[in-house]
Amino acid sequence: MKSYLFITLLLLTSACELPQRNATQTDAIRTIEAGAETDGRPEEYVMVTTAVTMPMYVHHDQAAFRRWGKQRGVNVSILGPAEWDVPAQINTIEEVIGTRPSGLLINGTDPAIAPVINKAVAAGIPTVVYDSDIVNSKRHAFLGTDWYQIGQMQGEEMVRLIGGKGKIAYMGILGLANMEAGFQGLLDVVKKYPGIEVVGKYDDKANVEEAARITSDLLAAHPDLAGLCGFDSNSGPGIGLAVREAGKVGKVKITTVDWEPEHLQLVKAGVIQMLAGQKRELFTWYGAQFLYDMVHQTNRLTDQAGARGLTNVPATVNTGLLRITRENVDSFMK
Image 1 (cartoon, one colour):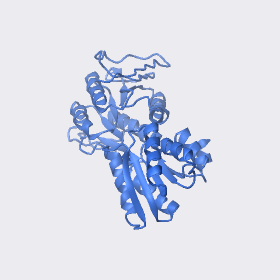
Image 2 (cartoon, helix red, strand yellow; image 1 turned 180 degrees about the horizontal axis):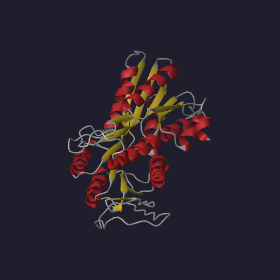
Image 3 (cartoon, one colour; image 1 turned 60 degrees about the vertical axis):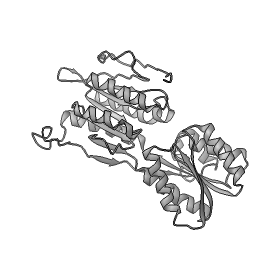
Image 4 (cartoon, helix red, strand yellow; image 1 turned 45 degrees about the vertical axis):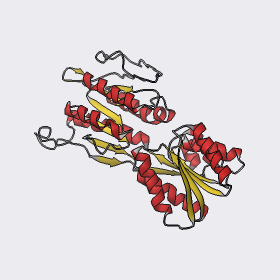
C-alpha cells in the first residue's frame, strides 16, 4: 500500500463535525462550512476524488465546491488520497457511505468505482458523478465533458495546423475510459486524411517528466514529426518542455487539454497552439446543486417520485469545451 499525504483544512466558521470515521480513512482535505440542517442534523455534502492535491482539482473543482457550500450555507467536505489511487478512492467512498451524508459528489475516475457508487445509491444517498461518466453505474446524474469531443477538437485543430499531412503522436493515461474516448475522437478525425500518419500512442502517466521523455524520444526517432496531442493535465507542459529543449517551438504543433496558468503561458509563448479547456467549475458547482435539489425536492415530479425511482434532476449534462489559442488566451489569463 502506498503511503499518502494527508492534509486537513479546518474551516473558516464553526460547524458540526461529521460522525467519527475509521482511523484508516484516506482523507486528504476536509472542508466544512457553516451548516443548515435536514431532519435535525446538519446537511453535509461530500466530494470524493483521487489525486486530491492536484492543482487542477484544487483550483477549479474544489474551489467551486467550497464556494457553492458557502453560498448555500451547508457543510461540505472534500476527501480522497493525495495520489492517483482508485482503490483508495473506493475505500474513501465506502467510509463516507457509513456517515450517511446528505449527498455524494464523486469524480468518475475509473469504471472500477461503479459497485461502490451503486452501494451509495442503494443506501438512499443522492449520488452525482462528475468529470467522466461511470456508465455502468446507477448514479443519479452525470455532469462533465464529452471526451470524444475533446479528441475531435484536437484532431480538427491538428489537421488545420499541419495542413492535413505529416506525422503525429498522442499521449495521456492509457486505459481510462474518458481518455480512450478522447483518443478515439482524435483518430476518427485524422483517419479521414491519408496524408497524416499516426506514429504512436503513449502513456505519460499524468507525469510532466514522463511526457517530456516520451516527446524527446519521439523527436529523436522522427525528426520530421509534425504534431503532438496531449490528453491529461500534465501532457502539455511535458510536451512543451521537450519541444523547447529541441529548438522546435512552432515547428512541432501542440494541442492539449486543460488551462492551468502554465498551459496558458505556453500558449502565450507560442509553444502550444491550442488548449481544449473543460468547464470544471460548472460541472462541480451544478453537480453539487443537483444533490441539493434532490435533497430538497426543488422540482417535485410527483408526490411519489422517490418511491417510483424518479430523479428530479437531468440524468446527463455536457458542460461543453473552451477553445483557447494565442488569439484569446489573454482573456483567460486575466
